[in-house]
Length: 247
Ligand code: FES
Image 1: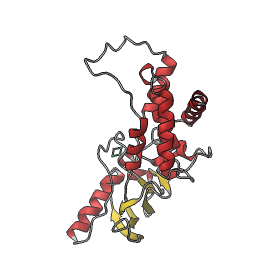
Image 2: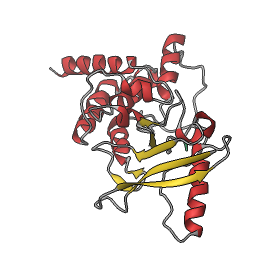
Image 3: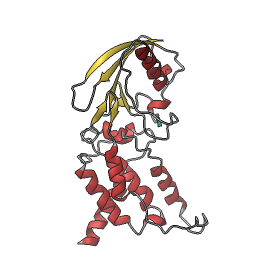
């Protein structure tokens, strides 16, 4: 199939960017990132700068791929990361616009690569449990009710790609933060730090320049792992309990 890729090119964080058109011919069975690989091989052969983009596992598990495709984070296929998106989802002759995540807290590094270290800062603020080291305990020694385990597992599916932030009109990372708070807050091991965690992570979230949540739901719609908005409700409930505890 023949396509035109309209790609955001930006030399560095402080230089202005622009959209540049590249014609490509690609198999419908190629993945979106394989198409960019093919384009980059051609650009390199022609002595041009290849397009910078993030990727790692290419299996939908690491969260590194991060492209806004035709205005939608990760493109048109629901519950699919950019690396799992295939060109058969597009039509021959189409023009596809490819941009980086757009959010104040995710500054552009180059072309399609943004700095998502703000997520690491939120995790450092409280997205962990403190546990004594030693041999791993027997898996069934701490019973966890099945509904709690299911909800914790669902929240733990968040791969930290940042699509929720890119989709949110407020540039909020509430879905990401709430997924981590929910994952740990539902399990027995996460209880000792449950309330200090939610306060610390929200403080970091706000200080890093992420916007507030106004329940538009774009985050959940764009999430490749379909993390539900319920996790934000859980975060808000824990935050209120934390506020009452400290009053
Ligand atoms: S490259 Fe790992 S999720 Fe896409």
